Image (cartoon, rainbow, N blue to C red; front, side, top):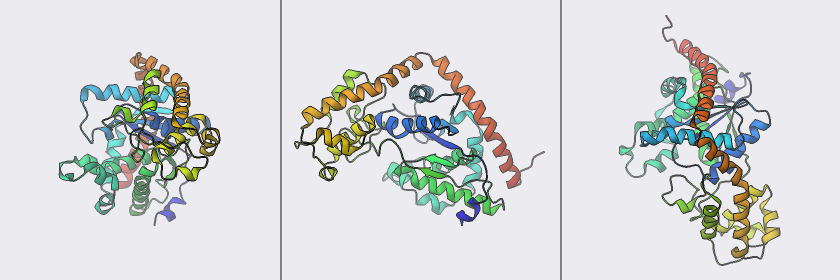
Length: 345
């Protein structure tokens, strides 16, 4: 169904992504998202990058902290090399069209589609009746985020591929239901990045997460050098030396994670890491990894701290970004209202 309507879309290339305004950003966010965003920007891609504060409140957020978390994520965007003159950086909630389009798309999406979303099942656990309605429907808000800017590509991790498929289904159904082939594009995933999934320093089978109760499980972008060294020194490993080939990492999740981190930070292959450190123990490898991590993150950390001490500077970027985003988003919502048949006055 959806492939027929996608062929008619002839709009410009646009890339959209966002990071949720909850908890401190960590090394996984930097390698898996921020570096990718900066690389896309530097390749000349038109990027819309938002702070997902509407998504954040699908679970309880302390109102006193939410604005500060929004600024911290914006600071991380800027400190990682994103240029507000080239990329549109804004808070999701500052562009009202996100919420407007989400409601309309809620009436396009189907219950069965949302029932298949695995992340809701994971996040709600055994007591889904206690979860907010927003947590259940946030994949539709995510679709609105993307379609509002008619984004053609979305940097996507493995855990978000299902949501992008839902976005494509919603876009295709809207285009078909209202007889507007090609109105919404069917966005494609951008799955390639500087690093595969970054895992916890305490459990190589779990993703590095800002919601993990153990701060030792992650390297925060605001950690100082001593803290980074300490966390890597304490990272869980096994007693065996590093292997000389990738096959030797297959059943060693923690070792594989640390090798992956080194490769991503050094911008080399994991094979190259093992050529250098294969046969050596973690007593030699961990200090090398810690030194590399400190060296790589020090400029980002320093600039984040400078920006967070200057909230007015961040707020100017966010305000300007929100105005530029709205200039693109508002006409799309106006067109959607016309297509749906809402009274226009």
